[in-house]
Image (cartoon, rainbow, N blue to C red):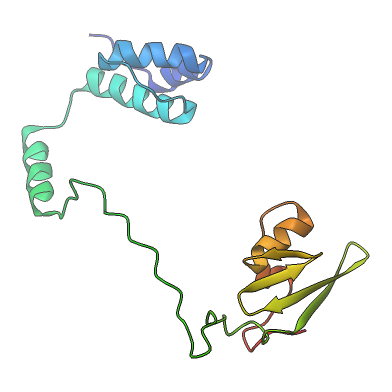
Length: 163
């Protein structure tokens, strides 16, 4: 029986395309894969080739693995989706605002790319450029064009904000 040179085998696999790796996976495992992740395919294929060449786990190791698996709390079904919690209401009927925010009516200002940005804090969201936004992150996204944390973008601290 010829010995396996794992380094040489891995180097040969790394030169293959994802399509070729998927074909090799099917040949080695005896079943197709839907994976297109090249590093994952490489690891799985080289592991199986090495296991085939050098032998699988010993009976003792298999028994120990089965013993450990029996003792683990294994989830057999996905967790149920938790319902969205209803917003907490205060006596006036408005949504309880985050403590980092200044009170409704306050205008938050920030200079961004040479322009002065002004956002009005409302009882149920924010007004920017004549449009309503549900969150500061939505306002920041409208300004920058990409997702970012609204509290960080507007540099609000944890003590009621800095207007």
